[in-house]
Length: 194
Image 1 (cartoon, rainbow, N blue to C red):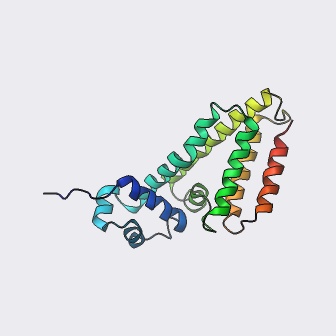
Image 2 (cartoon, rainbow, N blue to C red; image 1 turned 120 degrees about the vertical axis):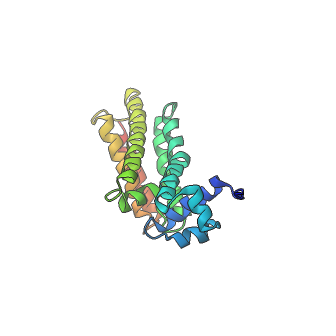
Image 3 (cartoon, rainbow, N blue to C red; image 1 turned 180 degrees about the horizontal axis):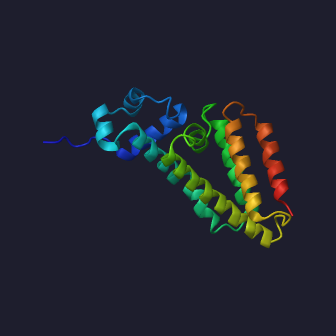
């Protein structure tokens, strides 16, 4: 008779996400997962499959928890400038509060795995396009209201903002200087203004 699972799969998945986020895919061994998740190797494989499958689930969990709410909010936003500022402030706050060098799970995964792992690259591309589209829709709304410049297409400005956010996340891996973050945020917001 099979033994019933005595752990919360969602809790374990969150722990796996944080472990991969901290150490990266290649830096996380199967033993690291067993030790960090607090479950047996057989339970891990029976529940989540191999290391790669667990990583993919963790990446999708990150998307669900951290990215999707920001994307969904874009559809109903009324304060367009506040929406963009809040995203930057979130990234800045995360960088200043979390373990130095942790960075962003999305960006870390893109740098480490996207060039060599087609499945992970597809997930990351979906996240990127969905997030870029959300930012683009907010910028278009801001252009229509005369808040954001019409000198550039909304798509171009969205790509600029998305790239700046990712640049901040990379920089946070080695430097978490509040003044630097404030300067970047202020210049990016200024660049959007009409």
